[in-house]
Image (cartoon, rainbow over all chains, first blue to last red; front, side):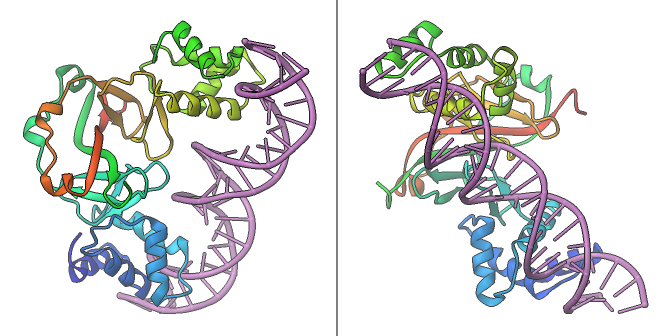
Length: 138
Length: 138
DNA sequence: CTGTGTGCAAAACGTTTGCATGCCT
DNA sequence: AGGCATGCAAACGTTTTGCACACAG
């Protein structure tokens, strides 16, 4: 995700508007490595804007996702999580507390798709999900 | 997933019962490489047992998952998919039609976890999800 | 002033649960 | 006969939508 100033420019140049709620969502996400769910973002924004709605959270997350500024993580079977780090990387999730950690290693040199798949899909990327239990939970 | 006869024995030796609905769910899953969702399984069982309920589908899938006979795939953001192939393998999903393909290559020799993660999580396995578009959709 | 964003309430969606009845063993 | 499985309806948690009002540009 870009800096808040750049992000502001990107939105404005797309005819979108900068509201205090959106700015707070950006601040909550920026440099956030905790992979928050919509609800966690909602709770944090609510501390400053007690009347903020889930609608605003979801709509803004959708906007940021469509702009490629954040990534939606499909790793927790119960809910989506959001990641402002859009560089290719991977994740570990604790099956007990659902805490998600980053794995920044680049595995792409060793991940080659078999031809049988290349003939059927045009693959744009991959995501490795490691499953386990974190130290706090075991 | 085991053969239907073995599966039958496993369930019975766990005090569980074999019903026609369950047998049909087993048949739908056995050797199925299409990674069906609960709804797809429901529709196929319904052809033979028109009064079958989602409850039965979900309960049976939960049972099979808890017995380790099938794997729940977290790869499609909209719904869970089920895989009777419990051998470690990976998947491609078409972001348009959600068709899921198998990737049977063993990448485990090249996937080593960084120590920083090993110190925080006890990892039991990993899953690679490839994202792209299938030939039918492009 | 125009139109995008907000917030409420309600709907939608996949999934789970309580409970009475059914049926496997 | 006993107990697990079924199926209905209702509940659930997450996410989406319709709409009137607010406010950024």
